[in-house]
Amino acid sequence: MKRFFIILLILLLAGAWLGQLMVQDPGYVLMAYKETTVETSLWVLLLIAIVLFAVLHTVLNLITRAGVPAQRMRDWRGRRNHKIAQGKTLKGLMALSEGNWWKAQRYLTQAAERSEQPLINYLAAAKAAHEQGDASGADQLLQKAREATPKAEVAIGIVQAQIQLARGQNEPALATLLHLKRLAPKHSYVLKLLKETYVRLNDWSGLNKLMPDLKRHQVLPDEQVRRLETEAAHHLLDQSLAEQPAEADSKTRLQAVAHTWQSLPANCTHDNQLIEQYTQLMVDAGSADEAEKMLRDQLKKQWDESLVRLYGRIRSSNPHKQLETARGWAKKQDESAALELTLGRLAMQNEHWGNAISHFERSIELEPGAEACAELSRLLTHLGEGERASAVAARGFELMNGALPALPLPPAKQHAPDKD
Image 1 (tube, rainbow, N blue to C red):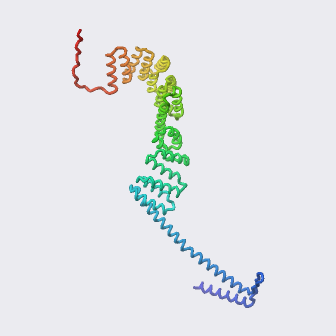
Image 2 (image 1 turned 90 degrees about the horizontal axis):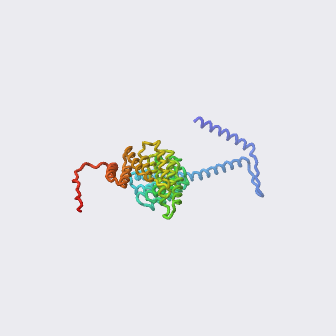
Image 3 (image 1 turned 90 degrees about the vertical axis):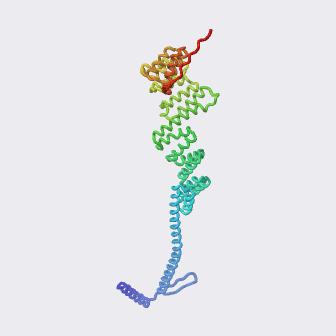
């Protein structure tokens, strides 16, 4: 209250002072523009300026305030749409998790139309449409997602590839994933889906080329990567010979197999099973001498029983040299049943029947096996030792299939002597 009276007193004093000034000297102002002149006192001019300022200020305030209700309305509508979109998104996601595909698609699509960021809604709605078997609806929703968020091509493409794989559209899925790989070459999930697609398509060449990326970005556990590498290499080797025309000569067939072998990852060329397969393919291609040399070199580096067995099956142009090579190994591997089996086979190739029998018997002694029994039985049969061959064959049968149970048998029939 005191402040009000103080301000009023100050205003009265200021007014009295101004009034005295106006009486003492009203001042004179002359304004001229071309042929028009305006004459007035200084105080009147100041009063007109104050009034004009007040009028302009009032008009501007009215214009500004007129736009506030419209902005408030827009803000209110935005908040309302956001709230509705949130509610429908929540209902849609709940329906999606419950497997209610139709309801999920409806709520999520409605929410997308009101949302400022509709990407998630469109992608989830596309999955719901796919689950209903609505391929056209799913594709349309994915297209809407692209139009709404063009920069989310990788996320949209992943959903599209997943839907294509689920439909069994492996070739379109491969095209989609290769496009995504160009956009995001380090994206681990894209690489994982691409691996799955190559396996589905039996595209072992494509998978073999993808393996470095799977390793570099650690997409899969190391053990799974090794299994995939081995599987791809196995199929590629088989295809290398199977895809050759029937009229291809042995040199062409060998080059095809060798080219595939050289394209494999380094660790595959040290895998004994793959080496065994490669050797057998070289033999099948009509290149037994090259197979023998490759296998001999490999056994010098690393001894392996399965490769030793395979060495005895190779029929090179110089079986005597093969036999001498195997005899050299026997000086260090004198307790190897596999090597004795191989020595027996190589002895047969050189027609050393007695030595072959000795090696087969030694192999059975070291490690009874059906394969050695079969070889020995066959050789004894051809040498006219039928009774001994039958005994060996019976033992081999037991090793392969297990001993027969003791069961009653009819008495052996006695053949009547021939009449003169």
